[in-house]
Length: 350
Image (tube, rainbow, N blue to C red):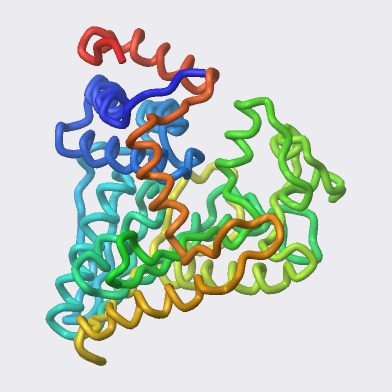
C-alpha cells in the first residue's frame, strides 16, 4: 500500500501525459488538478483516473490541444465549446473568463460544452473566491452514460450532477460546498472496488433495485441513489435542476446515448461581492459566521463541527506532511503505463 509525496505523484502524472503527446502546459494543469483531489481527500477524482484519461486519449474522446472556442458572448455571458479538450484545461479558461466579466460588470454566467471530465468541481470556485468573488459551478454529462436512479426508480437516468459553491472569507481554509447530488460520486464506487472494500448501505442498489453494499453490483447494472436517504426526493430534485443548468442550458441535451463519449457540461456563475457590500466586511463576517456555527457542542460520535470545506483543508495539511496513499491496484495500472510509455526513468524513484 504505497504512500507518495504530492510532488512525486505530480511528476508521475505529468510524465505519463507527456508520453501520450500532451503539451507541457496541459500536462501540468491536468496533473495539478488530479493531485489536488488526492490531497484534499477526494481520491475518487485523483490519480485513479490517470489510466482512464490515457484510454480516452487513445480513443479520441480527449483531444489534447483542442481549440477553445467562444461561440457566443455578451458583457456578462459566454458560451464555450471545448472541442473535446481536457475538462481541467477548458473549465479553468472558462472560469477565468467568468471572473474577468464579474469583476467588470458585477455578475457573469458562462456555459461550457464538448469537453472531457473536469475532475473535482471544487477547484474552479476556489479560483474565484481567492479573488474575492462568490462562485457556483454545476456539472452534468448530457446524453452520456448515467449513474443515478431518480427517487422512486431503480434504473439510471441521471448523472451524479455535482454542485459547488465557493465563498471568500478570512478563514484559513476556503469556504466551499462541493457535493454530488447523488449519495456518492461514481468514482468512490470504483475506489471501493479497487480497494476490495464494501460500500455503506444507502449508496447503491443492484440491478433489481435491492439495497447492496457490494461495489461490483453497480457495474452489473445497479445504480447510485440520490443524496438524502429516505429524503432522497430532495437530492433528486436538486440533481434534476443541476441537469437543467449543465445539460439543457448548455445544449448537451439529456437521455442515454450508448455511443456518446463522456462530456461534462458546465454552468458557471460568478458574483462580485463588492457590488453588494464591502468585501473586507463580508469576509470578516463569513469567518465570524463559521466560528459561530462551530460553537455548537459536538454530537455523539463527533469531535467538532466543521464549516463546508474545512475537512478538505485539514486533510490537505495532513497529506502534504504525511503523503498520499494510492491503493495497490491503481498504482499497478499506473506503473504499467509508465513502463509502456518508457517514462519510468524520467519519473525516478519516489
